[in-house]
Length: 216
Image (cartoon, rainbow, N blue to C red; front, side, top):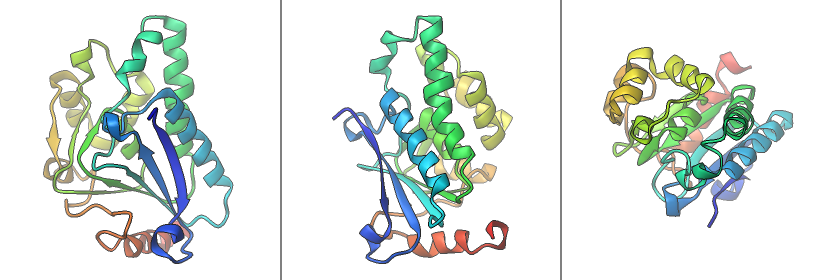
């Protein structure tokens, strides 16, 4: 499986037309690591959502128990050491997907379980609300690979998690628990993430977001 980003109405999961859509990261053989193709799919999906006036809320979740382990490093040798290819990867593929999320007016809820590293933290940082499971872990240990986080992505993460936490993720390769991240205010207190079957009152949580006066 080469990985993909999918979207389906929550009605196909819950059996009711809610205006809620599930966007799912699917690359379970690699802990849902993001490929270049998946970044492009993420951009296309959120650009389409922005045009969909029936959309009320988006739940970003993953397949197989881990949110996202980062980027698919198996692809890196093809572009990582060529400056033009590397710039295209970060500016067009990665930032294209992230910026489409940031530009989306529909409330986005992240449902995070398991590993959430690097690209996973970036994607989650684009969401308006972050629900996390007790077993979730967070970091951006790319220093172990010998290169820094791209500037726009770094600004996004630092703005969301806070400068000190971002520095520890990047400079120490520190890994944080769900409770650690909740203490920073980045996410809700850990519990059961919103499952495809409804999980911890998934539809009720999305309804709370979509009916908030802030989004009217």
